[in-house]
Image (cartoon, rainbow, N blue to C red; front, side, top):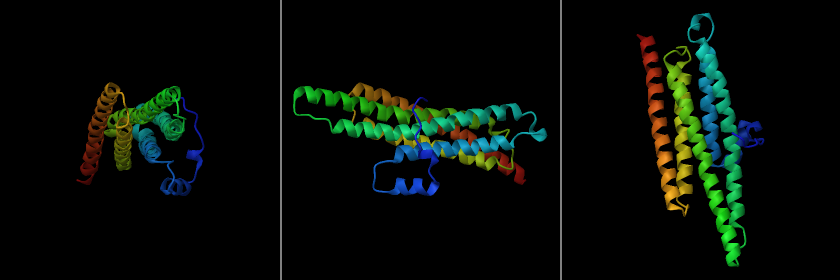
Length: 217
């Protein structure tokens, strides 16, 4: 990701919740979706961190690699949280452009179209992060430390929740996109990503439950 990060991730949990719950447009659902993805990465990273050492020597290289990749996805989620706010501000600025003349209407229309595309691309980016992170989560689930494997499952659930939330953000912005062909392409892409996320979450959580119940016997 290339978006410059702001200070949203430096807020306290309480201040973020207060801002998200206030009657202000940002941070909104797109930013909360990105935060859910970051929390998912934290849970899976913690599990991978606990699946190292002599007892897990065979799995340790994969787990160390997983931690590094998850840290990267956390940074992506941070970028996407900020990008959601930027894209909303850009759209609102475009709405306020003058429209008294035909030239002004044309400039405003182009600005609105560009802002709408950005507002679609940002949540799509989050869905891609969740898809990739869920693949890793499913891949390492069967090797995870059984004492913290439920945390990995919670991470998988959070990733899917993040993707589902991002999908709604895509949908509401697609509804206002005047380019019908582009809207169809974006919708197909988002639907495919959502399906991949669902399948990978199911695989990860299934493996987690298998480990949990195997240990209880």
